[in-house]
Amino acid sequence: MKANPIQLPTTNGNLHKPPITSKHFILPTITLALLITIHLYLGNFSGLGLTGLATPVAKDVKCNLFQGSWVFDDERETYYTNETKCIIDDRQNCMKYGRPDTDFMKWRWKPDDCELPEFDAVEFLEAVRGKTLAFIGDSVGRNQMQSLVCMLASEANPIDVTKGGDTRFRRWNFPNYNFTLVAIWSPLLVKTRDPNIGNFTRNSLMNIYLDEPDEEWTSQIENLDIVIFSAGQWFFRPFMYYEKGEIVGCHFCNQENITDLTVYYAYQMAFRTTFTTLLNLHNFTGLAFLRTFSPQHFENGNYNDGGNCVRTRPFAKQEMRLDGFKLEMYSTQVNEFKAAKQEGEKKGVKLRLLDTSDAMIMRPDGHPNHYGHPASDNKSYPDCVHWCMPGPVDTWNEFLLEMLKMEEGEGFIKGAPQRNTTKLNLR
Image 1: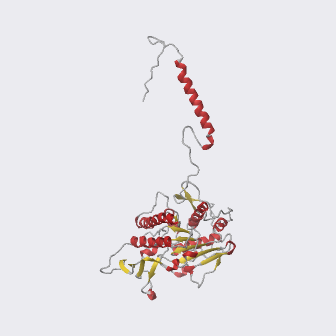
Image 2: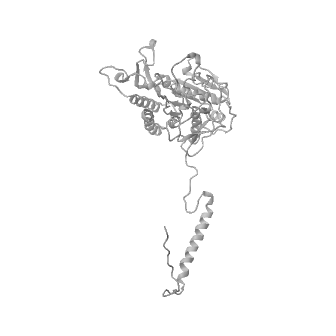
Image 3: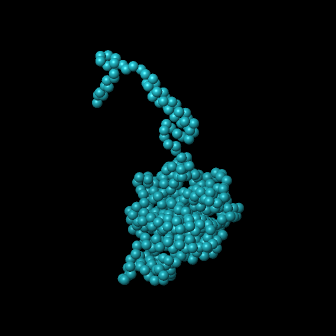
């Protein structure tokens, strides 16, 4: 498009130039003075990141560690190998049993607005010196616990002091730091009973008492300093639901005259009971985390009808997000957590959210699939629930360390010296 020229007044023709008066000097002079003042003002604040008339950018904006994406890092080193002085359950020891790809160990989590530091075993152990930390939940919680033991083994040899040989209730000591790490088996967090103990199967109909906390953890909680609650996959099995000692419904029971309640109802009530119990304890003065729902990644079917998890790379953020039943499970527990946290603030109980779900929904490549056990076992069921070690589950403990460091200002964790430990390289 051709621009129309603007006709300026000239001294030609009938357009005459007006006489110059003192009024013509006032406006330009004031304008020039204002421009000089603004320039000098901005120059004095150049160190604050001001540009032109832009507003300052705060440097201390808190970063959400749990919102981000996975970034491939070919130089990434593992924190441990299957030769490290720690125990990796064969069911998660993917490299030991022949997983051919290794890229699943080379992705690091990158929060949108900051960096997630590498795990520092010395820093972690100093932060928890003199304390006892317990993972309370199911085998996925134990998965994280075993990951943490191996990550700490680069600094101090963990001593297994488990009593009775029951690996569901594992206990490790780190004597140099007077630190104890515990796994407490409580897959539903509330009381359960199996009517057919001698004939237990995946489809056994169990009784679950939704308003009664599991004594496995309540009997020990007052001796613990840091607890991490988690639960998930067990809630999908068949149950008879009890409250106040009476049947209130069921899940997959196929019995007449009994209300078929959703798994979300039981999930909500179990966490409500857990948090209510925690808030009503008089002698618990520690720090409690909820580690959020860990998504499974079965494709092409379920675990028992051809489903598997054969992907070898993560999803991008735009490709996968929590939805369907996974989002419902996540939202159910987080809503109960938020209500409890608000009440806990009044009572001085510290509740924190270890929010791993968004990160892990993008990691279908991180599961053992068929590489989590010896080939001679000839197991037909793939594992798309637990996580390979080493693997993305180690990121949960990177999160945990950063969250513990945030407690320094609250006086719960003493400042710990930072020192990078030598990492082991699997390549």
